Image (tube, rainbow, N blue to C red; front, side, top):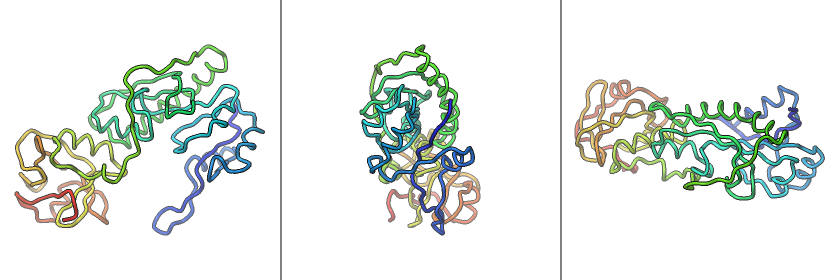
Length: 287
């Protein structure tokens, strides 16, 4: 298989000094001597004509972040192939990895599919299941699924080109994984501790789950749900290396957090620098 071009997002400013940086996809393509296309809009003049002149057999889409126009979807000889990070039709949409963790799924996977003009509605080609571990976060699960996606891509392309792989219409219960909003990231202490733990894992490392303590915004990086009773949002137990907070059902033990403007730290380090007592409140808003 010859990769004739890579389409990726335009270069963007990044970091404290807003320096223009290349995406990792662009860096790898340039290193391999592959032409890079970076349209600001997929319908901008000339972009489709450029793709058309290339006469692609396949277009492969992986987490591109934009909806492809129909003329592009129907351009390649064998179609547009999407590698979607869920077991379709579960979690169609932009944030399947996050939502699988937030909902406490024990198994997830990768689906290769033929794209149509719907939102992840096209027929499926190959799937690969993987277990979700208790320690997985959105970051670690993304890495695992990226590896699985690489493993099923070539069999997908080869099977379609040789006619040995037949698309299968999606069936079963459909669900959606919409883009995460800022409001989704705030901890609701009235939820059960187990659900809060899943939410923390599903939003780690980015965009992150947060609360406030004495007006300071704190991102919770790791936590563990425990049995016990406590008033939602209030500290029930504090020692030199343990902080337990009440929830709607059970207790949440904070393992790692990141105070506003500082690096992530284990709870022991945070407690050394902050005087916290039983009965203090971790709020949902900046109060």
